[in-house]
Amino acid sequence: MKQLIRLFFLTVLITSCHQKRSNSPMYDMAGINEELMPITRQSHGAPHSINSAEKSEINKKKIIKDGRLGIEVNEIEKTKSGIDTLVRNNGGYYASENFSNTDYESSYDLKIRIPADNFEKLIAGIESGDGKIIYKEIDARDVTEEFIDMETRLLNKRNYLKRYNDLLHQAKTVKDILEIEEKTRVIEEEIESTEGRLKYLSDLVSFSTLDLMITKKKNFKFNPLKRDKFTERLKQSLSKGWFGFVDFFLFLIKIWPLWIILAILIPLWKKLKIKKKKKQ
Image 1 (spheres, one colour):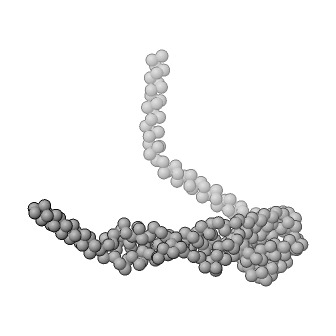
Image 2 (cartoon, one colour):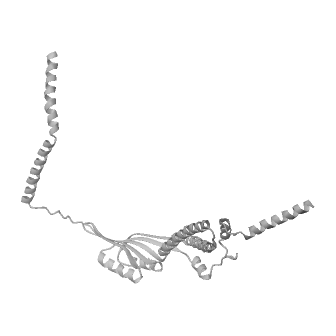
Image 3 (cartoon, rainbow, N blue to C red):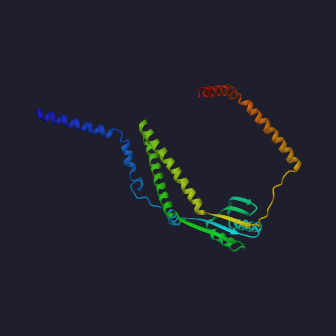
């Protein structure tokens, strides 16, 4: 009988504990981690499917084209005007434009941004001109893999952010809310950074860069510097000599403590010298 009573109370105790657990809030950060682990799945466990537009964008090659070109011409202004027309007709613009004129040469240093589809057309137009090509460097970098990697990570981060926002509405304690908000802040910063990098790469892919140097050599001519008249130069020399003398005189006055020390030391030195001679 006693054993039956003990068994009855034990059963009631276990049932009570089980009911308390089932009624307690099923929400903690461990649960959050379990909810967020399958990032590549949808909220109902189905695998995420990328639509046809996303597949087309990912599969498209991402090539960054850059180039350096130097030409030597006989009529630099005429050549520059022709390149202005080429750039304008091909939808490009000057990112920077610098002109230099020396005794030896005149030159334009141009940084041209041009739509990638018109990059070769622009170079062909420049080469078909009257200029002599001094150097030419063309570089093409395939960044498709980097694009795919960053787009995939961006998609995952957005899924994380959406899941955290959903969990934030379910949070019941201040601790859970603060932890979720901190994780949300970090993910938002990572998303902004990734989006910025993708935008930068997209700009490099869409618009190619050409550093163009146009040079015109000159026959060297000696151009002596203009000098003042003899009388003006004589006046300047006399003036500078006088001011130099005044500066030297003022310097001697400035070191007056040294003269006092010398006035004391020189007589003492002479006396010592006379005493040494007497002893000999």
